[in-house]
Amino acid sequence: QPIELLDNGNLANNGDTTSGDLTYSNKFLLSSNFENGSYNVEYKISLSDGSTKVVASQHFNYDNGKSNLPPVISNLIQQDTVQTTVLFTFSVMVNDPDGLNDIKEVYYELFMPNGTKIVNSQGISQFPLFDDGNTVTNGDATAGDGRYTVFLTFPNTVTLGSWKFDFTAKDKVGHTSNTISHNVEVQ
Image 1 (cartoon, rainbow, N blue to C red):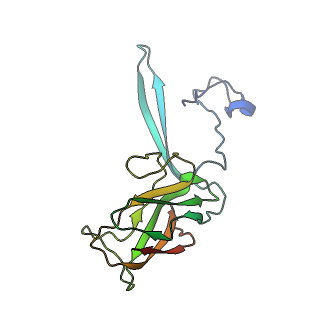
Image 2 (image 1 turned 135 degrees about the vertical axis):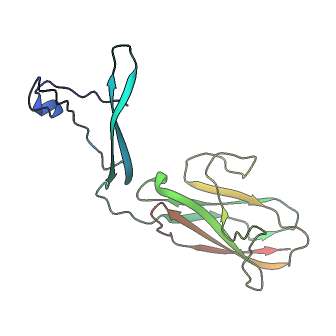
């Protein structure tokens, strides 16, 4: 939202000290609810033909004064037993004291009954869960509610037995949540 700069000498309302000195000013309060990070301000002028032109820009880093805390995973919903070739859905609830927008990723790692970590053909061992409301692609029912979901099918060629799932979340500064582990018996 654009904020108009004024040359009106109104120090209290918009920070301008002297009217008519061609120094334009205004105030903008950065809330502690804004995310920490890099921000860019563009200064524009309106020309007589109705167009605008960027005349300056300013980059700054903002720290909202809050300590960034790691996310927390809870409320796992996952079956204890599944059949091969049968699609099953599982999910975890993720909360971040700095807000859901601070969550960078939620994933699970999968371990075979002999303890070997699963790594797919692209070298990925951390498989994502989603909070996007896409029931067709990944089974998530409601976007942005903090419940991260995915579905999976074990092919009939997998080793039967107890498979371990480890669930973790990371925030934008790299803090890692607690890990929830759950074993699923594949039959």
